[in-house]
Figure 1 (cartoon, one colour):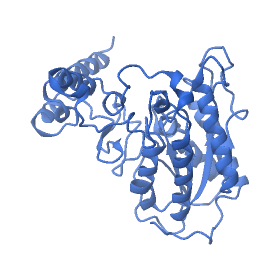
Figure 2 (cartoon, rainbow, N blue to C red):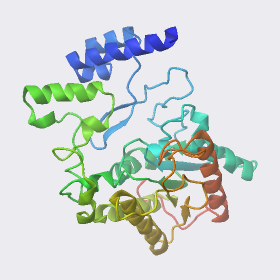
Figure 3 (cartoon, helix red, strand yellow):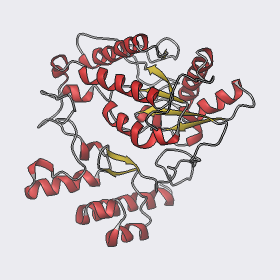
Length: 352
Protein backbone atom coordinates (compact mmCIF):
# COMPACT_ATOMS: atom_id res chain seq x y z
CA UNK A 1 0.00 0.00 0.00
CA UNK A 2 1.33 3.44 -0.94
CA UNK A 3 2.21 6.06 1.67
CA UNK A 4 -0.56 8.34 0.29
CA UNK A 5 -3.20 5.62 0.73
CA UNK A 6 -1.99 4.86 4.25
CA UNK A 7 -2.19 8.57 5.10
CA UNK A 8 -5.72 8.80 3.68
CA UNK A 9 -6.88 5.80 5.73
CA UNK A 10 -5.32 7.25 8.86
CA UNK A 11 -7.02 10.60 8.24
CA UNK A 12 -10.40 8.92 7.78
CA UNK A 13 -9.94 6.93 10.97
CA UNK A 14 -8.95 10.09 12.85
CA UNK A 15 -11.98 11.97 11.51
CA UNK A 16 -14.33 9.16 12.52
CA UNK A 17 -12.88 9.25 16.01
CA UNK A 18 -13.33 13.03 16.22
CA UNK A 19 -16.91 12.77 14.96
CA UNK A 20 -17.74 10.10 17.54
CA UNK A 21 -16.45 12.46 20.24
CA UNK A 22 -17.49 15.91 18.99
CA UNK A 23 -20.25 15.19 16.45
CA UNK A 24 -21.16 17.59 13.67
CA UNK A 25 -18.58 20.21 14.56
CA UNK A 26 -15.73 17.91 13.68
CA UNK A 27 -17.40 16.51 10.56
CA UNK A 28 -18.31 19.96 9.20
CA UNK A 29 -14.96 21.36 10.37
CA UNK A 30 -16.33 24.26 12.40
CA UNK A 31 -15.21 25.33 15.87
CA UNK A 32 -12.32 23.85 17.83
CA UNK A 33 -12.70 20.15 16.86
CA UNK A 34 -13.02 21.25 13.26
CA UNK A 35 -9.63 22.91 13.48
CA UNK A 36 -8.17 19.64 14.71
CA UNK A 37 -9.71 17.84 11.72
CA UNK A 38 -8.23 20.41 9.33
CA UNK A 39 -4.84 20.18 11.06
CA UNK A 40 -4.89 16.42 10.54
CA UNK A 41 -5.54 17.03 6.86
CA UNK A 42 -9.02 15.47 6.95
CA UNK A 43 -11.02 16.44 3.84
CA UNK A 44 -14.22 18.49 4.28
CA UNK A 45 -17.47 16.54 3.84
CA UNK A 46 -19.20 16.30 0.48
CA UNK A 47 -22.43 17.75 1.89
CA UNK A 48 -23.60 19.99 4.72
CA UNK A 49 -26.95 20.50 6.47
CA UNK A 50 -29.69 22.64 4.90
CA UNK A 51 -32.84 23.73 6.76
CA UNK A 52 -35.25 22.90 3.93
CA UNK A 53 -33.60 20.42 1.57
CA UNK A 54 -32.14 18.38 4.49
CA UNK A 55 -28.64 18.76 3.05
CA UNK A 56 -26.82 20.40 0.14
CA UNK A 57 -23.46 20.13 -1.57
CA UNK A 58 -20.66 21.64 0.51
CA UNK A 59 -19.00 24.52 -1.42
CA UNK A 60 -15.75 23.85 0.46
CA UNK A 61 -15.34 20.32 -0.91
CA UNK A 62 -12.39 19.45 -3.15
CA UNK A 63 -11.16 16.02 -4.16
CA UNK A 64 -7.69 15.03 -3.03
CA UNK A 65 -6.36 14.93 -6.59
CA UNK A 66 -7.96 18.26 -7.53
CA UNK A 67 -9.93 16.77 -10.43
CA UNK A 68 -13.31 17.41 -8.84
CA UNK A 69 -14.72 20.25 -6.73
CA UNK A 70 -17.82 22.19 -5.76
CA UNK A 71 -18.02 25.87 -6.65
CA UNK A 72 -18.96 28.67 -4.24
CA UNK A 73 -22.66 28.34 -5.16
CA UNK A 74 -22.76 24.64 -4.27
CA UNK A 75 -22.68 23.00 -7.70
CA UNK A 76 -20.22 20.43 -8.98
CA UNK A 77 -17.79 22.12 -11.34
CA UNK A 78 -16.25 25.51 -11.98
CA UNK A 79 -17.55 28.90 -10.86
CA UNK A 80 -20.76 30.30 -12.37
CA UNK A 81 -21.17 33.93 -13.41
CA UNK A 82 -24.06 35.71 -11.68
CA UNK A 83 -25.76 37.58 -13.22
CA UNK A 84 -25.74 35.52 -16.40
CA UNK A 85 -23.65 37.17 -19.14
CA UNK A 86 -25.58 38.68 -22.02
CA UNK A 87 -26.01 36.29 -24.93
CA UNK A 88 -25.15 33.15 -22.96
CA UNK A 89 -27.46 30.13 -23.21
CA UNK A 90 -27.49 28.45 -19.81
CA UNK A 91 -28.47 24.78 -19.39
CA UNK A 92 -28.94 23.32 -15.91
CA UNK A 93 -28.93 19.54 -15.40
CA UNK A 94 -30.98 18.56 -12.34
CA UNK A 95 -31.38 15.19 -10.68
CA UNK A 96 -29.80 12.69 -8.33
CA UNK A 97 -26.41 11.01 -8.02
CA UNK A 98 -26.82 9.83 -11.62
CA UNK A 99 -26.68 13.51 -12.69
CA UNK A 100 -23.98 14.46 -10.17
CA UNK A 101 -22.20 11.40 -11.61
CA UNK A 102 -21.16 9.66 -8.43
CA UNK A 103 -18.30 7.29 -9.18
CA UNK A 104 -16.77 9.51 -11.87
CA UNK A 105 -13.72 11.17 -10.36
CA UNK A 106 -13.03 13.90 -12.90
CA UNK A 107 -15.57 16.72 -13.36
CA UNK A 108 -14.68 16.78 -17.05
CA UNK A 109 -15.98 13.21 -17.48
CA UNK A 110 -19.46 13.83 -16.00
CA UNK A 111 -22.50 13.79 -18.26
CA UNK A 112 -23.33 17.52 -17.78
CA UNK A 113 -19.77 18.55 -18.69
CA UNK A 114 -19.75 16.27 -21.72
CA UNK A 115 -23.17 17.63 -22.72
CA UNK A 116 -21.68 21.11 -22.88
CA UNK A 117 -18.85 19.85 -25.07
CA UNK A 118 -21.25 18.12 -27.49
CA UNK A 119 -23.58 21.12 -27.71
CA UNK A 120 -20.73 23.49 -28.48
CA UNK A 121 -19.50 21.04 -31.12
CA UNK A 122 -22.95 20.87 -32.73
CA UNK A 123 -23.44 24.64 -32.57
CA UNK A 124 -20.03 26.13 -33.24
CA UNK A 125 -19.63 29.68 -32.00
CA UNK A 126 -22.59 29.59 -29.60
CA UNK A 127 -22.04 30.69 -26.01
CA UNK A 128 -23.43 27.62 -24.22
CA UNK A 129 -22.92 26.79 -20.57
CA UNK A 130 -24.02 23.58 -18.87
CA UNK A 131 -24.26 23.41 -15.07
CA UNK A 132 -24.32 20.22 -13.01
CA UNK A 133 -27.04 20.70 -10.34
CA UNK A 134 -27.31 17.01 -9.41
CA UNK A 135 -27.21 16.00 -5.73
CA UNK A 136 -26.77 12.41 -4.66
CA UNK A 137 -29.71 11.01 -2.71
CA UNK A 138 -32.21 13.72 -3.60
CA UNK A 139 -35.80 12.78 -4.40
CA UNK A 140 -38.17 14.88 -6.51
CA UNK A 141 -39.20 16.81 -3.38
CA UNK A 142 -35.68 18.05 -2.62
CA UNK A 143 -35.19 18.83 -6.29
CA UNK A 144 -38.23 21.13 -6.33
CA UNK A 145 -36.67 23.10 -3.47
CA UNK A 146 -33.26 23.10 -5.14
CA UNK A 147 -34.92 24.51 -8.26
CA UNK A 148 -36.45 27.38 -6.28
CA UNK A 149 -33.47 28.18 -4.05
CA UNK A 150 -30.46 27.49 -6.26
CA UNK A 151 -31.40 27.05 -9.93
CA UNK A 152 -33.95 29.81 -10.65
CA UNK A 153 -31.54 32.58 -9.51
CA UNK A 154 -29.15 31.43 -12.26
CA UNK A 155 -31.79 32.35 -14.88
CA UNK A 156 -31.52 29.08 -16.84
CA UNK A 157 -32.74 28.89 -20.44
CA UNK A 158 -33.13 25.10 -20.36
CA UNK A 159 -33.55 22.69 -17.45
CA UNK A 160 -32.91 18.98 -17.92
CA UNK A 161 -34.37 16.62 -15.31
CA UNK A 162 -32.94 13.11 -15.18
CA UNK A 163 -33.94 10.67 -12.44
CA UNK A 164 -33.48 6.98 -11.60
CA UNK A 165 -34.90 5.20 -8.54
CA UNK A 166 -34.64 7.61 -5.59
CA UNK A 167 -38.41 8.20 -5.48
CA UNK A 168 -38.92 4.44 -5.23
CA UNK A 169 -37.12 4.17 -1.88
CA UNK A 170 -39.82 6.03 0.11
CA UNK A 171 -42.48 3.76 -1.39
CA UNK A 172 -40.83 0.78 0.34
CA UNK A 173 -42.05 1.98 3.74
CA UNK A 174 -45.21 0.51 5.25
CA UNK A 175 -46.98 3.89 5.32
CA UNK A 176 -46.10 6.94 3.28
CA UNK A 177 -47.43 10.50 3.37
CA UNK A 178 -47.54 12.85 0.42
CA UNK A 179 -44.51 14.76 1.74
CA UNK A 180 -42.35 11.66 2.43
CA UNK A 181 -42.15 12.54 6.14
CA UNK A 182 -41.84 8.87 7.10
CA UNK A 183 -38.74 8.68 4.88
CA UNK A 184 -37.02 12.01 5.55
CA UNK A 185 -35.85 13.73 8.73
CA UNK A 186 -33.79 16.72 9.78
CA UNK A 187 -30.02 16.39 9.90
CA UNK A 188 -30.22 17.31 13.59
CA UNK A 189 -33.10 15.04 14.62
CA UNK A 190 -32.14 12.67 17.47
CA UNK A 191 -31.75 9.11 16.25
CA UNK A 192 -33.79 6.22 17.66
CA UNK A 193 -35.94 8.59 19.73
CA UNK A 194 -32.99 10.04 21.67
CA UNK A 195 -31.40 8.72 24.85
CA UNK A 196 -27.86 7.41 25.16
CA UNK A 197 -28.30 4.79 22.44
CA UNK A 198 -29.80 7.40 20.12
CA UNK A 199 -26.88 9.73 20.86
CA UNK A 200 -24.41 6.96 20.10
CA UNK A 201 -26.28 5.85 16.97
CA UNK A 202 -26.38 9.39 15.58
CA UNK A 203 -22.64 9.84 16.12
CA UNK A 204 -22.10 6.49 14.45
CA UNK A 205 -24.24 7.57 11.50
CA UNK A 206 -22.32 10.84 11.18
CA UNK A 207 -19.01 9.00 11.31
CA UNK A 208 -20.11 6.75 8.44
CA UNK A 209 -19.93 9.81 6.14
CA UNK A 210 -23.04 8.49 4.32
CA UNK A 211 -25.75 11.14 4.45
CA UNK A 212 -28.51 8.57 3.91
CA UNK A 213 -27.83 7.26 7.41
CA UNK A 214 -28.43 10.75 8.82
CA UNK A 215 -31.46 12.17 6.97
CA UNK A 216 -33.40 9.07 5.90
CA UNK A 217 -35.58 6.80 8.02
CA UNK A 218 -35.77 3.04 7.66
CA UNK A 219 -39.24 2.53 9.08
CA UNK A 220 -38.06 0.75 12.21
CA UNK A 221 -36.05 -1.70 10.15
CA UNK A 222 -35.20 -2.45 6.55
CA UNK A 223 -37.43 -0.91 3.93
CA UNK A 224 -39.37 -3.70 2.23
CA UNK A 225 -40.28 -3.74 -1.46
CA UNK A 226 -43.58 -5.49 -0.67
CA UNK A 227 -44.98 -2.11 0.43
CA UNK A 228 -44.50 -0.49 -3.00
CA UNK A 229 -47.89 -1.62 -4.35
CA UNK A 230 -49.66 0.02 -1.41
CA UNK A 231 -47.92 3.35 -2.03
CA UNK A 232 -48.90 4.53 -5.53
CA UNK A 233 -46.65 7.17 -7.13
CA UNK A 234 -48.97 10.09 -6.35
CA UNK A 235 -46.15 12.23 -4.95
CA UNK A 236 -43.83 11.56 -7.89
CA UNK A 237 -46.46 12.63 -10.42
CA UNK A 238 -47.35 15.77 -8.45
CA UNK A 239 -43.73 16.71 -7.88
CA UNK A 240 -42.68 16.28 -11.50
CA UNK A 241 -45.71 18.24 -12.67
CA UNK A 242 -44.85 21.02 -10.22
CA UNK A 243 -41.22 21.04 -11.30
CA UNK A 244 -42.23 21.50 -14.94
CA UNK A 245 -44.66 24.30 -14.05
CA UNK A 246 -42.07 26.08 -11.91
CA UNK A 247 -39.40 25.76 -14.59
CA UNK A 248 -41.72 27.25 -17.18
CA UNK A 249 -42.75 30.05 -14.81
CA UNK A 250 -39.05 30.89 -14.41
CA UNK A 251 -38.74 31.35 -18.17
CA UNK A 252 -36.94 28.07 -18.86
CA UNK A 253 -37.70 25.32 -21.28
CA UNK A 254 -37.49 21.81 -19.89
CA UNK A 255 -36.38 18.42 -21.13
CA UNK A 256 -37.22 15.23 -19.22
CA UNK A 257 -35.00 12.15 -19.45
CA UNK A 258 -36.25 8.63 -18.77
CA UNK A 259 -33.62 6.20 -17.47
CA UNK A 260 -32.47 2.77 -18.40
CA UNK A 261 -33.51 0.23 -15.80
CA UNK A 262 -34.18 -3.44 -15.28
CA UNK A 263 -37.29 -4.84 -16.94
CA UNK A 264 -40.47 -5.14 -14.85
CA UNK A 265 -40.67 -8.36 -12.87
CA UNK A 266 -43.36 -9.98 -10.74
CA UNK A 267 -40.62 -11.16 -8.38
CA UNK A 268 -39.12 -7.70 -7.81
CA UNK A 269 -41.43 -4.68 -7.34
CA UNK A 270 -38.59 -2.10 -7.60
CA UNK A 271 -38.17 -2.24 -11.40
CA UNK A 272 -41.96 -2.12 -11.74
CA UNK A 273 -42.02 1.07 -9.67
CA UNK A 274 -39.34 2.67 -11.84
CA UNK A 275 -41.34 1.76 -14.93
CA UNK A 276 -44.42 3.33 -13.32
CA UNK A 277 -42.39 6.51 -12.96
CA UNK A 278 -41.23 6.26 -16.57
CA UNK A 279 -44.83 6.08 -17.76
CA UNK A 280 -45.73 9.07 -15.59
CA UNK A 281 -42.92 11.10 -17.16
CA UNK A 282 -44.14 10.14 -20.64
CA UNK A 283 -47.64 11.22 -19.67
CA UNK A 284 -46.45 14.54 -18.24
CA UNK A 285 -44.49 15.14 -21.42
CA UNK A 286 -47.60 14.67 -23.56
CA UNK A 287 -49.98 16.65 -21.36
CA UNK A 288 -47.61 19.55 -20.72
CA UNK A 289 -46.02 19.50 -24.18
CA UNK A 290 -42.54 18.82 -22.87
CA UNK A 291 -40.07 16.67 -24.83
CA UNK A 292 -38.93 13.41 -23.25
CA UNK A 293 -35.70 11.59 -24.06
CA UNK A 294 -35.61 7.85 -23.36
CA UNK A 295 -32.22 6.25 -22.76
CA UNK A 296 -33.86 2.82 -23.02
CA UNK A 297 -32.86 1.40 -26.37
CA UNK A 298 -30.54 4.33 -27.11
CA UNK A 299 -27.81 3.51 -24.58
CA UNK A 300 -26.70 -0.10 -24.14
CA UNK A 301 -27.67 -1.47 -20.72
CA UNK A 302 -26.65 -4.73 -18.99
CA UNK A 303 -28.73 -7.66 -20.16
CA UNK A 304 -31.39 -9.03 -17.84
CA UNK A 305 -29.92 -11.66 -15.54
CA UNK A 306 -26.38 -10.77 -16.54
CA UNK A 307 -23.65 -8.87 -14.80
CA UNK A 308 -24.77 -5.39 -13.83
CA UNK A 309 -21.60 -3.81 -15.16
CA UNK A 310 -21.08 -3.01 -18.80
CA UNK A 311 -19.12 -0.37 -20.66
CA UNK A 312 -21.75 2.32 -20.01
CA UNK A 313 -22.65 1.72 -16.36
CA UNK A 314 -20.73 1.24 -13.11
CA UNK A 315 -23.88 -0.14 -11.47
CA UNK A 316 -27.58 -0.18 -12.35
CA UNK A 317 -27.95 3.63 -12.32
CA UNK A 318 -24.52 5.32 -12.41
CA UNK A 319 -22.74 6.00 -15.67
CA UNK A 320 -19.19 5.03 -16.43
CA UNK A 321 -17.09 7.72 -18.11
CA UNK A 322 -17.95 6.21 -21.49
CA UNK A 323 -21.64 5.95 -20.61
CA UNK A 324 -21.74 9.57 -19.42
CA UNK A 325 -20.31 10.73 -22.73
CA UNK A 326 -22.73 8.57 -24.72
CA UNK A 327 -25.74 9.76 -22.70
CA UNK A 328 -24.61 13.36 -23.13
CA UNK A 329 -24.44 12.89 -26.89
CA UNK A 330 -27.97 11.42 -26.96
CA UNK A 331 -29.33 14.32 -24.91
CA UNK A 332 -27.44 16.92 -27.00
CA UNK A 333 -28.98 15.51 -30.19
CA UNK A 334 -32.43 15.67 -28.59
CA UNK A 335 -31.91 19.29 -27.55
CA UNK A 336 -30.95 20.29 -31.08
CA UNK A 337 -33.66 18.24 -32.80
CA UNK A 338 -36.35 19.71 -30.51
CA UNK A 339 -35.00 23.23 -31.12
CA UNK A 340 -34.63 23.79 -27.38
CA UNK A 341 -31.79 26.27 -27.86
CA UNK A 342 -33.85 28.73 -29.89
CA UNK A 343 -35.37 31.95 -28.51
CA UNK A 344 -38.65 31.54 -26.64
CA UNK A 345 -40.58 34.79 -26.34
CA UNK A 346 -43.64 33.08 -24.85
CA UNK A 347 -42.04 32.52 -21.48
CA UNK A 348 -42.05 35.18 -18.77
CA UNK A 349 -39.60 35.23 -15.88
CA UNK A 350 -42.47 35.14 -13.42
CA UNK A 351 -40.72 33.72 -10.36
CA UNK A 352 -37.11 34.73 -10.95
